[in-house]
Length: 87
Image (cartoon, rainbow, N blue to C red; front, side, top):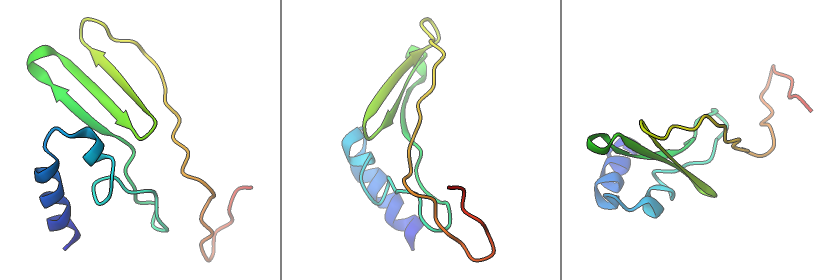
Protein backbone atom coordinates (compact mmCIF):
# COMPACT_ATOMS: atom_id res chain seq x y z
CA UNK A 1 0.00 0.00 0.00
CA UNK A 2 2.77 2.44 0.94
CA UNK A 3 4.57 1.71 -2.35
CA UNK A 4 1.50 2.70 -4.38
CA UNK A 5 1.09 5.90 -2.34
CA UNK A 6 4.74 6.83 -2.93
CA UNK A 7 4.50 6.00 -6.66
CA UNK A 8 1.46 8.26 -7.00
CA UNK A 9 3.26 11.04 -5.08
CA UNK A 10 6.45 10.85 -7.18
CA UNK A 11 4.44 11.02 -10.39
CA UNK A 12 2.46 14.00 -9.06
CA UNK A 13 5.65 15.78 -7.86
CA UNK A 14 7.42 15.55 -11.21
CA UNK A 15 10.43 17.88 -11.09
CA UNK A 16 9.12 19.78 -8.04
CA UNK A 17 11.95 19.31 -5.51
CA UNK A 18 9.95 20.89 -2.65
CA UNK A 19 7.22 18.26 -3.12
CA UNK A 20 9.84 15.49 -3.04
CA UNK A 21 11.07 16.72 0.34
CA UNK A 22 7.66 16.20 1.98
CA UNK A 23 5.82 13.04 3.08
CA UNK A 24 5.20 10.47 1.78
CA UNK A 25 8.35 10.79 -0.37
CA UNK A 26 10.60 12.22 2.34
CA UNK A 27 10.43 10.43 5.67
CA UNK A 28 12.33 10.93 8.92
CA UNK A 29 14.01 7.83 10.32
CA UNK A 30 11.51 5.71 12.22
CA UNK A 31 11.81 2.96 14.84
CA UNK A 32 12.90 0.54 12.10
CA UNK A 33 15.79 2.79 10.95
CA UNK A 34 13.94 3.51 7.71
CA UNK A 35 13.95 7.01 6.29
CA UNK A 36 14.97 9.20 3.37
CA UNK A 37 18.54 10.49 3.24
CA UNK A 38 18.16 12.81 0.24
CA UNK A 39 16.48 13.26 -3.11
CA UNK A 40 18.36 13.87 -6.33
CA UNK A 41 17.71 15.46 -9.72
CA UNK A 42 19.81 13.76 -12.39
CA UNK A 43 20.56 15.40 -15.74
CA UNK A 44 22.65 12.76 -17.54
CA UNK A 45 22.73 14.58 -20.89
CA UNK A 46 24.44 17.52 -19.18
CA UNK A 47 26.54 15.31 -16.87
CA UNK A 48 25.00 16.96 -13.80
CA UNK A 49 23.23 15.99 -10.60
CA UNK A 50 21.84 18.02 -7.69
CA UNK A 51 21.36 16.37 -4.31
CA UNK A 52 18.69 17.90 -2.08
CA UNK A 53 18.15 17.79 1.69
CA UNK A 54 15.50 19.83 3.53
CA UNK A 55 18.14 22.40 4.54
CA UNK A 56 20.67 22.33 1.69
CA UNK A 57 21.38 21.40 -1.93
CA UNK A 58 24.61 20.33 -3.59
CA UNK A 59 25.14 20.50 -7.36
CA UNK A 60 27.82 18.33 -8.97
CA UNK A 61 28.99 17.76 -12.53
CA UNK A 62 31.58 15.73 -14.38
CA UNK A 63 33.38 18.94 -15.35
CA UNK A 64 33.24 20.57 -11.90
CA UNK A 65 33.16 17.83 -9.25
CA UNK A 66 33.94 18.90 -5.68
CA UNK A 67 34.47 16.29 -2.97
CA UNK A 68 32.58 17.05 0.20
CA UNK A 69 30.33 15.81 2.96
CA UNK A 70 26.90 16.61 4.33
CA UNK A 71 25.92 15.48 7.82
CA UNK A 72 22.28 14.59 8.34
CA UNK A 73 21.01 14.59 11.93
CA UNK A 74 18.14 12.25 12.66
CA UNK A 75 17.61 13.33 16.26
CA UNK A 76 17.77 11.19 19.37
CA UNK A 77 18.67 7.50 19.10
CA UNK A 78 15.74 5.12 19.32
CA UNK A 79 15.82 2.66 22.25
CA UNK A 80 15.09 -0.92 21.23
CA UNK A 81 14.60 -3.89 23.56
CA UNK A 82 17.79 -5.92 23.81
CA UNK A 83 20.06 -3.12 22.54
CA UNK A 84 21.98 -0.37 24.25
CA UNK A 85 21.67 3.17 22.91
CA UNK A 86 24.86 5.20 22.61
CA UNK A 87 24.64 8.30 24.80
